Length: 262
Image (cartoon, rainbow, N blue to C red; front, side):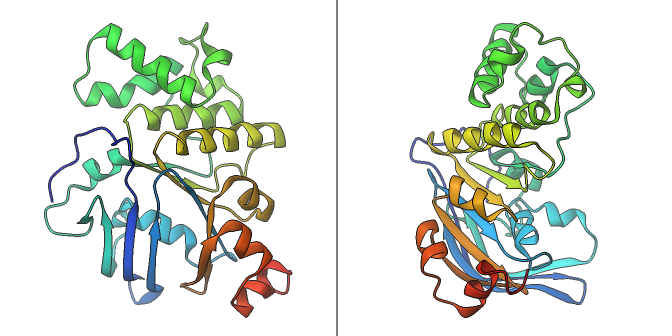
């Protein structure tokens, strides 16, 4: 598989998974997961704590490679290629499959330099080109109007919600095909949560494949097109979000949605 260099295609790129298993050492964390995650859509992963949804999310850009003793089997394909095949560069993979974490993690740099950091690493040195990337990325993350006149301000001085949208802008500056959101609003107030959810919806409409892990059932229904329910390492049921919440087929999902466990 070649390294990733190009910007996303207009049609978007999804992820195809077949019989995928994952282990932390001897612990079998994911078992036989099969699903397709579509571009231009938002997919929510739900389920009780410890069920494997965040682990599965991190498998998609090989973040779990950073943990010693992990291994996988089965197929996880992106852009038609197995991301775990020999020769795949995880760093290049993560340029196309970006990730937003639970806690905002801006660099201790200016707002401008936070967004320009990735493009600079890729060799973009033109001031005018960087200016355009920074402005476009901040607009797409719904932050531009709030910070346009203070780009020299330290990113750590922003509010929590603004920091999270800055991290989204930093990711978008790399022109990803997929953005993974691991409980991105769990530390935010309702107004900031709304801003981040709006941003996720808008970037999905541009062809990006957006995937969000959430414990907030209302958030899943508000923001996602499709939902997958995980339980004890299994992907139990997946489908359109309205169907998952209104007419679940599996009793375990029914029990989870009605509060009998989780």
